[in-house]
Image 1: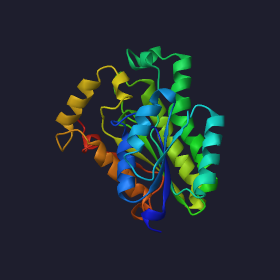
Image 2: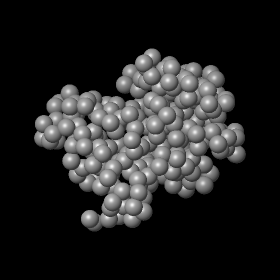
Image 3: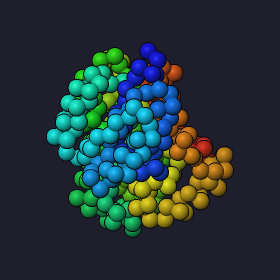
Image 4: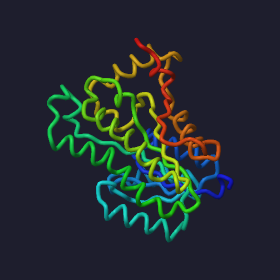
Length: 254
């Protein structure tokens, strides 16, 4: 099947700096039909303005922390498209106060919220998407190196990303017999709306550019291109993996 006959749903569009937007652009270039979601009415106008730049793409509101909104969305997608071939999960959140100070100070509620929105939501949307992925397909989520090495002040998000990467492997096992592949992209730091909440994020960018073999930070278009590859036929033998798109930063000892 050519990409022109494929349909994907993308979660996590906030603004033009969103990784979700970079992925949407690359999939659109490859001919995919796109359903793009945004969280709430506050983000609606900016999201819709962007979506109109991609002819044929449609926008939907869905807060992934509410099961009834997920159910309603996938009922809409079923009625509109019938079959899905791809899903992009570019959603993460922790309360801002959890991304300052020490991990030791993580609150019970902050821990719960970070894991609910950043991890469980992947399980929830994958479960809802699977019945529509009757021809197989791919699921891609976004992670970060803080899942496996300590990034000061990334705190509970690092623990949540570790849980997300483990969830990718378990989902890959469950969905493999249906020919649905599940992978994570571990991107280098990117100036997104979410990243602004991390204390010392500018230092993270600077350090990354200095230490990465390519001596620069990753571009969102590069992340988008990798997602498009993973969802295409070219990625048909890859599942349960974490693919690094970080200019090589993760290979360095110091």
